[in-house]
Image 1: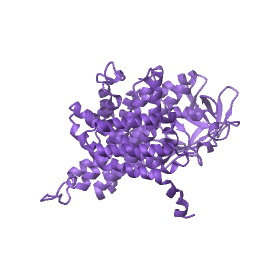
Image 2: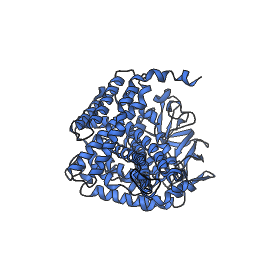
Image 3: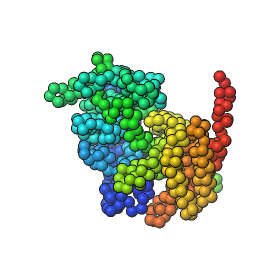
Image 4: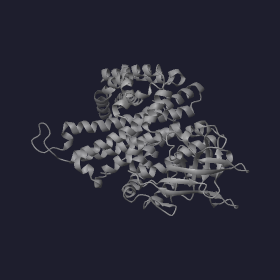
Length: 579
């Protein structure tokens, strides 16, 4: 079973998130109207299915290899990257000033899902470049933009983010990489970074590293971190980027999944210091990094949607073909899809994937509105909504990826546990998504300690009202929807009136509660819209919405109870778990 991009489902999700009439020549998304969105996604799917998908298993089996400081990507990847660059795919959402197409984040979200479903280990390389582009557009000097940004936008060069160090993962305040000022306005970097995705490779002639480091006189903690640009190659006297910088790859990790993606240990400053240039202001590096955080975390959420979609497609195909036992009322061996418990698993996978996609698309649309809205108040509200939804999109979608890939193996049975069927690779690849770009626990903490409290809860209140409006107009599962939304309201009220520290015990169940309520209401909204437009998939959308509401969202009241009453039992954990 090979992956096929679900173009109709993705386009429907994009239209729903954009709003009625928005993808029209005179609408907010006029630049992707008149077939532009459809054509772009069709070509993205063609590239994914014909070029990236055949390389996925090769990447998993061969992996990236390291020898004498050099990293070699799997066979065929260099040629695929050359085609990626030639196709201009790197430039979709980048600004036009440096060669980008300046198209919506919403459209790029659809492309991101497709590419990651076909070959996540390959697609993560340009994903990092998109984050670097955002950071540089906002904070780099004109000189740095001219020298580096245009080449990253075009895909000629790739980019990385160097954050993590041994002993300083999620807590960046502990980092030890240091920067020293040079007399010419540049800096010198010294230190070690780990888990650097595509820190070294053979896909492009230069790699631009964005590196967090600390100056000697910097304040302690995260307030003293600066962001620097340090390329693999520097310009020589003739201006050609042929002079090697003092940065090297010391090795790559042997990982559970995404084997084709090199995860590198990077060393800076063995020979006098790596030449680097400041982005933004000294000691304001985290502010620069957070410029790209909404999009970066959304992109990881879309990786989760991608893997859940592919797992669902594989499991559905297998369940239709595999005959085992007799389903209720059958007189002979039945396809396992006819067995109620297998159907339940498939519906869980399919409805959760569609819900996760809907949440991600709503997040992308809010990012677009924050950038495109001419009214300052509406732009601010859109930014606040994007910030509120981002941790939910990232954590829920990647949790769903882990759950869906696990269910796929269960449906395949013993054959799912065999590498040759390809399902095992999906669960191995998916596992990292809940960890990197901020663990899902950190997303939940961010949600309950910051995002639901921002602007005195204005974004949260607006989101709750939108959900209640959908419930009022719902044509089915209205009681389940109402219970989910009101459970979210009770939990939200408790958390916003509770000290941030005391709210931590309920953070993860609250995020799942939020996602269930938001996902259920979006699916019902989508089902109604599909019926109104006589969409060929209207019946399927309604069935998935009903299943999600009646079988999954019904967990909401229990989650609310956990959030409100579960603090004491969590705080007894040391006694329960032993010293």
